[in-house]
Length: 357
Ligand SMILES: NC(=O)c1ccc[n+]([C@@H]2O[C@H](COP(=O)([O-])OP(=O)(O)OC[C@H]3O[C@@H](n4cnc5c(N)ncnc54)[C@H](O)[C@@H]3O)[C@@H](O)[C@H]2O)c1
Image (cartoon, rainbow, N blue to C red; front, side):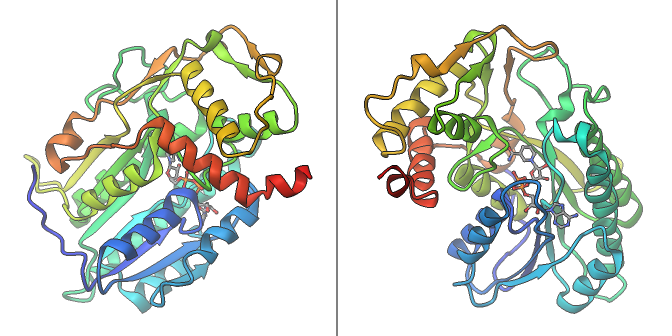
């Protein structure tokens, strides 16, 4: 295991995308785990999905008295620079991005603005953080994505695999982030780690993701479509496991490689692909168990098993051997436990019983 080289205690940490799914949980778990920290959160609160979800996540962070929230767009260079000047963060975690593969067909501009210009501003601010002696960024951790593997058919996906054939603009922006961070690391010595996340799920997760969409549809009495007759395997990673992995990574900035560059990229996922049909069956059981759906719900009548969509891949999962080796990362939340937490949160957030009465 790599030696920890960054002490988080006593530090100021900047988290962009702090009202987002992963960002808000990262802020919460950091405050629970590490003493004497100050976290500055930036988020533009865009309406890509239900904004009340973002507001409720932020509401939950109000109890941490040193947490400062700034509503702002990372594509706004002046705002980013003034935050760096004022708070001098030593660790930066960039999670703000326009996520989602399909939406990049509808609204490509959002991806260029947040993922390219926004990330460039973060890199520039990290670069200039060294202008004042002794106050520079010790580690930049940034979100990449499993989607950069495109239509690769070799599984599991390994960081050694080629990633130069993205099949969406979203994937292309995430790959660009890795290249930009590499160049800035080389040019200005910014220690940086890119994390390729694989499907993250859990309470207050993203409504654009399948498990959340299935739940909405089943509750409305609509039919859900399960591709490749359910015979697809995916790596589902529970939010707390992901965040614990991110925190381990934050504590260890990459050492210089052979070319003297302090930049690394890792896959971060469960490494235990689950059959989609099995995942949906556990989701159904947990939706009934938590009272989101009644016991006599006719799932078979609301489920359609359909063929594979063109371009879809049967099995995708992460090779996380480097992450295990360097950070001793081991997700340990079972799908049942994770989906139970999601279903319980869903019932209470959407006040399902009251609506049914
Ligand atoms: N959740 C996953 O399964 C997954 C998988 C792969 C990659 N990722 C990446 O991880 C990161 C976090 O994802 P998430 O699931 O928490 O998504 P999310 O959409 O819930 O969070 C992102 C947050 O960033 C904010 N944001 C977007 N553009 C911004 C901008 N220009 N300025 C300031 N804030 C902005 C949004 O309002 C949102 O709250 C993203 O970079 C995403 O691409 C997530």
